[in-house]
Image (cartoon, rainbow, N blue to C red; front, side, top):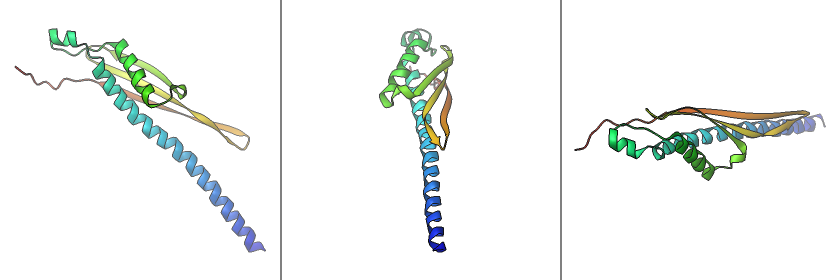
Length: 137
């Protein structure tokens, strides 16, 4: 009879360990996906926000900050639900084009015993748009 209790305890311990691993895996997978999404959306939004009229007249890159923010939020919302994200745009420089974006992911709260835990993941990214320097005649 004692040996069967040890078997039960090993099964319960295994289920507990699997639940903890699934919780940690869910949080880290979301973080990786969010980082690459933010990176791609930032790059594409900066290209969308380039002021082409200014570039044609002066040959220098400049972005429109309002157009960048609008494009970023539009592109980001096409891929995810915005209700779990909070955006902070800081350090947006129009010429030379540089942006800094902070995206906070609000995760669901997990109840472990009587304690409720939530994991908020913060991703910060800085983007600089450069011209390759080649000229065409």
